Length: 451
Image (tube, rainbow, N blue to C red; front, side, top):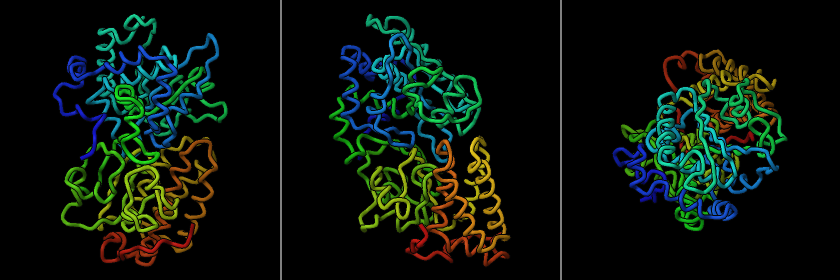
């Protein structure tokens, strides 16, 4: 059974309220942090090996160390709660049921960074969670953990919640900052990076909800103890949003030492696939990461079990690997159509492109139209090659990663399921009435030579 750090008290009735959270040891980590030198807090975070849980996986302590500290210039912590990646909902769970864990993490982090004003930029659709967070902030303030001269330390800190307007692009940190400032949420050119010029051109650290929540057990138990959980550079626990064709969809906390197969089939986690269906494929890190067929999902290129951690999921690069991403684990059974799923994702990224970069603005719509033709029996073999060429010219040629996020699902779908795309082209009279399912599915699926 995995060790739980973030969800260990999730089952306790009333844990979203200050009084209950406090009885379970809440804010003890903040009290401990206030007695520590700032450099020691930063060192604990570095020692923990904590990586950003929003998708990029960048070392948190290293990111904090980049923040500029010009004299007389305020600094800010901004929590990215704009959880808009299809298949990802673990931050929602934390904020809805254990909001004080995030707030305590923000207090500790802001104390370390020297930030007196912090912000939670939350997805616009999470209106009810905004109310929960604001209520928790007021509770923390009444208890003396927010406001002026917290616990007599001389440290002042305020937290504000800002709702977005439902734009996926604002999950990118610089677009988020533009939106926070009241502007159109277009990504900024970098450099300068937010650590130097972020919110209102002030030094700013932007971290994901889960990342900041993990600061609490790190400070409470020490970075060294946190690093003992997991494996290699995948330390600590990770929240996974599991959905799709599984018996037990939900949010799970894993220690990244379990295999993908165990996560899918064990009763402790997803509980297997309904109706005895076979596993066809999985998108393990949210809609933007490459899809993998069953044979590559369950084994690495060396024939070893693929593990639920950053390194193992990426093993082999994009040819045979994928990414941990934001932890949005989407399972597809044998009856699912990869072509139609890819079409759905392509429509999402076309709709959410801010239009600032030509490859993304034009390319996402082009891919969607071609995929729509293929799925509706109007595609050609040349369309498959054209799709491949378009995604290549989007990837790496945009200001922000949305272009990559739009290209990778298409590339992986063609790379691993080209035979399915060809079936749709060859069987126009059938593709409107049935999916490319088990009858056409060979196991193992050969990896296409195209890379």
